[in-house]
Length: 231
Image (cartoon, rainbow, N blue to C red):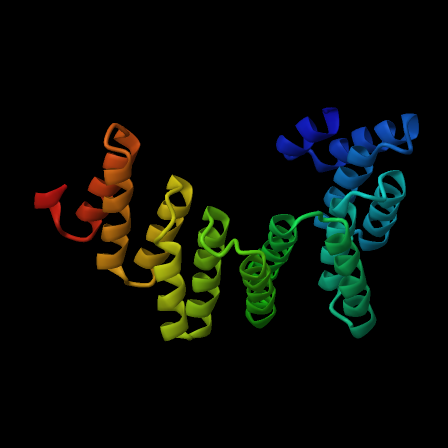
């Protein structure tokens, strides 16, 4: 807990010290090893992060999170052998993920990780794997699949694959979750789909007639789109 608090305050070295003390008291603490590894990875200490992740895996070998963290670390190293190690670690994570929804969630998480690193082709591949996993399990119409479609739309737009992106945005618009709808509206607005963004937030407001936040979000986008008379 102290390590997390220090990390939130931006006190990186103090956070690392706190995690190291926790690990000294309990070397088999999965959470301490994993979170220490995450912080070490953030500050560029790859070897130490790798050791922490492997310790987390030893502490809880059935938990996919240790393998997923290790896969991210290895992929960040960029060379061929590291990418191979990343693929192996990710496969281990998938084996421990449980049901189809959890496996799709891992693919989505890795896709978003790649997107944030700027690896858009790799991100699209991972997100498509998530989509295939949902479809094979009959989960293509779920809220999680709608959120995935919005992620895929963003990557497609950034790659310039507009027709495919518009199809993905249409799929995402079937969501009922407010966070997903607002994410979709923000994406649409950023890529100059103003009318679509308004339509999404109007639907969100219709789904939540008693929500002042939903009504305010609609009013704000109408204002930004130069339609104050409807706000």
